[in-house]
Length: 307
Image: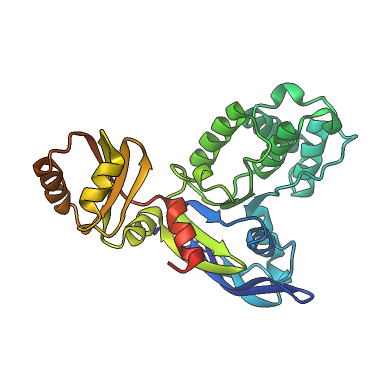
């Protein structure tokens, strides 16, 4: 991984008797990190602790080697762009005025704040809405406005909490491209309860469940660990049930997924050839073979189940 930007150690937070997160630990370098877990897993609480909106009960959050929770280091927050899941915005304020005021509060002059605001709106495709009141925006447009406020000035760390919720397919594609661009020079922590939203975008994943980290590392590491040295071979045949009867005594993990498709678990890539030989000698007509590993989603489900 690249040079460490954020270090989180033993982060814990309780609300009454409910434990939101417990001993959460991970670090971020440059690039996109997918923070994955179902609703209520502890993603939002962790993110709010990182950006200083929630005070943890225990733990340490170091941003570029400095304690972000120390009031003396509050200036560091201007280098962190945060996009919350739920838009809470002043409905009666115009889009441009809102961003200009935020830029001014961050220390920019009015002229620079206006320039930065227009640039940010251009990035998220809202330039033509600059004079519209926020209340007139759609849910997806409000989410884009939240992204724009995170882009008012260059940040070292961007924290996106469920950024794709409520965004149309075109906006989804544009936002993915924007996040990919930001990650070239910055760290991006991106939460989602949908694994497909981060696959192909994130190189690293942090999997959380019931407030605890289950896995942290690269997606390649996750998939390799998921496979446990085995391969799943998907075979297209004429009669899947007939093939299952032939193979079930040899391969313990054999399942039919459609009338013409069957999946067999083998110990290694070389075993695929042996599998094909067995089928051919049994007179089975094979249409196609697709070696594959488990998906990230299957890996996460296995972790939750303790597999």
